[in-house]
Amino acid sequence: MKPFDVYPLYSVTPERAKGSWLWDENGTRYLDLYGGHAVISIGHSHPHYVHAIKNQVEKLGFYSNAVLNPLQDQLAALLGELSGYPDYQLFMINSGAEAIENALKVASFATGRQKVIMLERAFHGRTAGAVAITDNPKIQAAINPIDHVIKIPFGDLDALENALSLKEACAFIVEGIQGVGGIYSPEAEYLQAAKSLCDRTGTVMILDEIQSGYGRTGAFFAHQHAGIKADIITIAKGMGNGFPVGGVLIGPQFTPWHGMLGTTFGGNHLACAAGIAVLEVLRDERLMLHAGYLGNYLIRRLKEIPAITDVRGRGLMIGFSLPYSSADVRKRLLMEHHIFTGSASDPNTVRLLPPLSVTKGQIDLFFEALIQVLQTTPQPA
Image 1 (cartoon, rainbow, N blue to C red):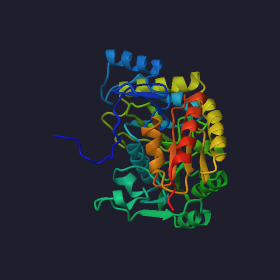
Image 2: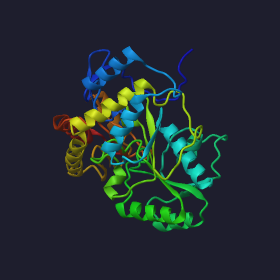
Image 3: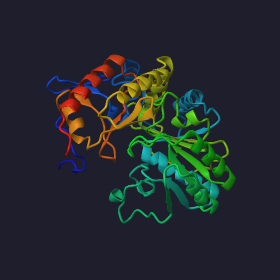
Image 4: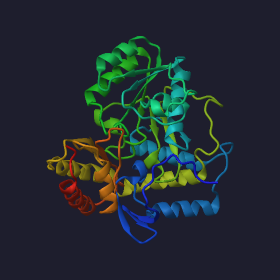
């Protein structure tokens, strides 16, 4: 047997990592400015994180949700404190797509409605409910129904108001910052008006913070820059720093009942140990402030490069556009300068999603390499 071949792979085999560095099987060092799709939040192999997982697995790695697990209570309390949502409820699962699925179920249970309003360029996952509200027909199979989905233009408040006025949608879902779509941030005024419209029409507002949350933008959640509170928030990626874990923050207006949601592995002891360690490092090392500071530095320097046509994002969730496909630039950064960056659905965009612990010196190394690559990459005629 061999792996199902669905990933285009670079010929790099990482064997160990520390902070923002990776080393391959030949001992070559790579700078990680992508964090495995924004997963690495506190840095690779952080000692506090490693100790927490090793200590927990020596005691108890897993038991089901049929018994008490005080670690879930500890994680929920710390998450509520750091995120500014102490009165919300936490349901833990294993991934971002599962977070979306369960958020949609809660919204539909609460409203009795079926339809969902989504934005163009949205990416919410690959499972049945999540892929239906992902703006990519190529990954929607015939078994994935989309007739309940209302897609509207990004940032178009009139279109949102018209869709909400029908009172057919259980939820309006929006990413704090669109990630796969190319790092596009909804305006603060748009989010504020959207929340008001959702409240007025009895529609649940779901903020997908799977990629943009956990301190990446300088606030715990990207939508908090707009001064709003979402009804439901989905989290994953940076939540476990590589351990598979996800969650749904559910507002106090929603009442759970036994059997409403369920999971076998979600919220297991190892996942909680990883999640608690991540939150403790975010708090103790003040990584949200660090992300905001370095993000401002990154954006300022990117805007000074003439070959770059646009710079978008906030904190350490940044995209920049070139006047041609970014594929060769990203490949040269990796193969010649040993720097990982990311792509987007827009082929001209480069995404930067480094660990929140990345240093200014490491960012400067990236700029030296980027300027050299841009100066020596032939532009299409």
